[in-house]
Image (cartoon, rainbow, N blue to C red; front, top):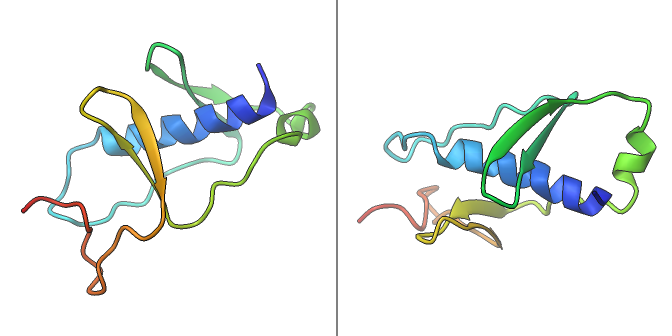
Length: 100
């Protein structure tokens, strides 16, 4: 498995976990990600969490890319995980893509 793919899987799993939780009336909820954990989103759309070690951290970071700030992850109607860079909040702090 390539490092870039691993990082994408980690981000996707974190996003999927956060997005599958019930929405709380537009109250943003921070993700709970641990630095010693890896998160995967596999080819079948399943998510996984893995305890990570430190002996191969350099290999993991090789080819990895940082997720840009102002990135939104979401699940489309087709069940596919997507990401969108750019603003996702209105000037008053409300979510642009919320209900009604």
